[in-house]
Each structure stands twice: as C-alpha cells, then as structure tokens.
Length: 576
Image 1 (cartoon, helix red, strand yellow):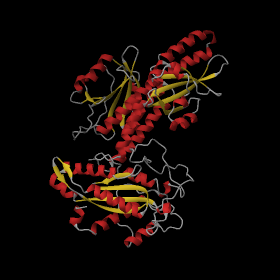
Image 2 (spheres, rainbow, N blue to C red):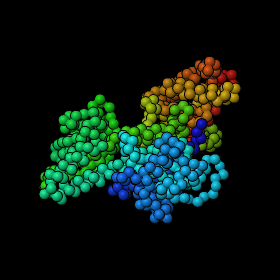
Image 3 (tube, rainbow, N blue to C red):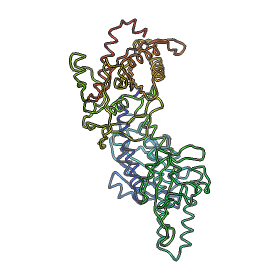
C-alpha cells in the first residue's frame, strides 16, 4: 500500500516532467530539439548523463546531442554507431515496457561492437537495486504510429544511484514518447520552413516551390490545414490534408464548411480565440464526425498565398489524445487512493482549501475561538500533510485552478492544489458555518459540512482474517459511502479506516440525517470470500468556516467524532 508521501513525490516529478515536455515544444530547430531532449533527461528524469542517437539516412545512428558531462559531450558528439550493432543491443536487452535494459552481467557482449559509449567510474554496488557502472539503459524512439526507428536515448547512472522503479520507468517511457513526437515535428517544421522560404524568395520558381509545398502538406504524417486569416471568414478552413481528414473522420469538402471554432469543444473556444496567429500554439479538443472529441495540439504559422496576396494560416494539427490520457492517469494516481479509488488526503485538503480564505466572515466568531470554547483549549490532535499557507490566498479570494478536472461524476472536480499566486477574485463567497439555532432560516443557515468517519471493529477484522479481508471491507465501505452522497459531494479516504465526506449546502439537521444514513449504509454485513463480516462507524460533524485552516476544520470534525465514539458502548458501536 502506498505511503502518504508518495503522491507528493509523484506530483513533484510530474511537474518536472511537464516542464521539460513543454521545453521540447518550444525548441525552434531540430538541433535545439535534440539538445533539449538530452537536457530534459538530466534535469527532468534525474540521470547524470544522456545522449540522443539519431538515425541517419544510411541507417546508422549518430550521437546528435549529449548532456550532463562536458567531457563526454566533446568525445561522443558526432560519432557514429553501426545500425546492426544497435539492433543487436536492442534485441539482447531486457524489455522494461518500451525501455531496453542490459545488465552489467551481460555487458561483456557489447565490447568492441562499434557503438560510441562513455564509462562513468563508480564503486561496486552493495545492494541489488543499485546501478552498476556497467549497466545500460536505452529508450528507442519511433515515428508516431509506426515501428520505424527514429533514434535511441541512452542514459547512464541515475543521481540516486538506484535502478529506476516502476514509477521511474513509466516517467522515462512517457518522456521518450513525447521526445519522439517533438523530433518528428521538428523535422517536419524544418521541411516546412524551407518550403516557406522558397515560396517567399523564389518568385521565378513559384510553380516548383508550390509543388514542394503541396507534397509536404498532402503527405505529412500529421494533420495540416490552410485557413483564412482576418475578415468575417477568419479561421475558415480552405484546405485540409488526408491526415487531418482521417483524424477527424470528415471529408475535405466537408471540412471547408467549418472554422476551427466550429469544430472546437465549447469549453475550448475561448482558448482557441486567444491563441496568437503569429506562431501561436494551443491544445484544444476538436469534434469528429461521430460526435466524439479528440485532444489535439494546434500550431499556427502565417503564409502568403501569392506575392502581395492575402495572408493565410497554416495550421499543424497533432493528435495528443494518448499523451493527455497518460497525464490524466498520472495525475489521478497522485491524487487518489490506490485501494479505494477515492480522493486521497492531499486531494481532500486541496478541495477543502479551495473553499476557505484567511479572513473570517464579518460578524462571526473566530474559528479558533469556537474550537477553544467547544473543547476547553487549543485543538490537540494534528494531521499529517502540509498545513494551509495563509499567504497563498488573498483575504477576499481563493486561488482557483482552471486546469483539467480529474474527479469522477460523483466527486466534483476541484483544484489539484492551491496557493500559486494568482491574482485574487473579487467574487469570492465566504464559507460560513450555520448557527445551531438557525437551521430554519433558509439558505443563510446552510454551510459546508465535514463528516469525519472512523470505522468501529475494523482492526479486529484485519487481525483475525488478514489484510485481504480488511482491504475488501474498505473497498465496500468506500462504495457505500459514495452511493450515499449527492453528485458534487466529496468522499475521501484520509488513511487507514478513516474517511471524510464534504457536503455543501446543509444545515445542522441535514448533516445529522446524512451521518445517520451513511452509518446505516455501512453496518449491513459485508461478504468476503463467503464470510460475512460487520463494521460499525462513528461520525463527527464539523463545519468549514473562512478564517479556519484546513487542519482546524479536520481537527474539529475529528474531535466531534471521538466525542460521539466515547458516548456509545463498544457493542453499540459495532452495531452501528
């Protein structure tokens, strides 16, 4: 089972990976792209040395870029390795998904094979999972949608000295996938730029240049379109290549009836219109003929139709659906509990933090004063995880994350983090706890209820029947809790046998009713491997209030849960 710190490590790694992938797309030339690929392995994936070996026209591989060691860069850059030697290495290697690994115990077979290499001296490993100086790890790069070899990324010695685990291998594979796309696009852009220069400078050879452009456009492996620029028909598609027609499932004649705004997802139209035509780039969803949406990367260039003629938009359309799927999977793993699939502790705190600001609502007592008054002093129980940063929010506003929502239908998509210094929003509505004697006052008496749930009798099930049965119980309890709340409410697993429910728009009576319903949903027997087991549940109800920190809100609900638990006998708790 994952430790609580792993989601934070994965989020940090994911942010680094997103940054180096963004750098790939900002490179202006093929040489810059190759060097950026090598640099990204060192800065984003944590290897001490990386080299990009690019397939040449004759099939051999040349060392096109090196990063991490200036001596290795001077020695290796420009050296050529025979294709048959590379094929032998890749066939000999152990398959780590799309990666290829050759252990030092097999490295003797690589001696004198003609492939340029660099040996990093290091002590002999003491542990089985340590990196040996003779180990070799490669990431083959293939042209998108085919088995054609584009090149190979080779790396040496992770900075932590350990062989990469499943997470490190998956991150390397994702990066290699994006690097192959970036290199392919850089080659395509280089060809297109040469064609555009010829169109502009060689008026006498206009026919030949037009044919060159036409072939590059029509036979490009990625979708391309020419659209009008400016005027009432701005963005209307004038011409589309076969790759774009296949991608969207529409004929070229049909596409000429549309603009890209007509094809874009309604939520992406604003993003599309804000993109600058002068070299602008954006990622949006475009509709297919079947009504589905595909994630694509749009890159615009401005071209002239003829001498002093109207300017047109040349749009390069790249399918990035697979990359978006990988990003969503990685983000979901970092923010959700691996066992139950519920939002984890970090995601719960992020969603709760998004509803709070540092200034208490006017006319209401301080949240800390309320806690002190209720429990006779400062709250004593602390929770693991980062405390809310009071400097991350303006006194009147939240820091909203406008990115891709990853929550399910029942768990409203919330920000994956808070406190990134975004300009404050003046329309923030304070979260206020309802008065206990004001439940009949209508909307003003409703607030954000925080229900802290602790299972009763779970430890004895775990001890008696084992963790397999305990895990099955947790999964079923998570399902029952999720089924018992409204769309938009959040059910999260805080850790162990503790769960938290966030339910907005409730008064005190509503929250009490919800706690009773959820408790009644949990107590029926749970069948695991033909055996019926039962657990009870104790609920504590707290209320989120602007001016409180996330920890204070959770502590309040936790304290009330323990008060409720102690008020009942052990037999009553096991019975629900």
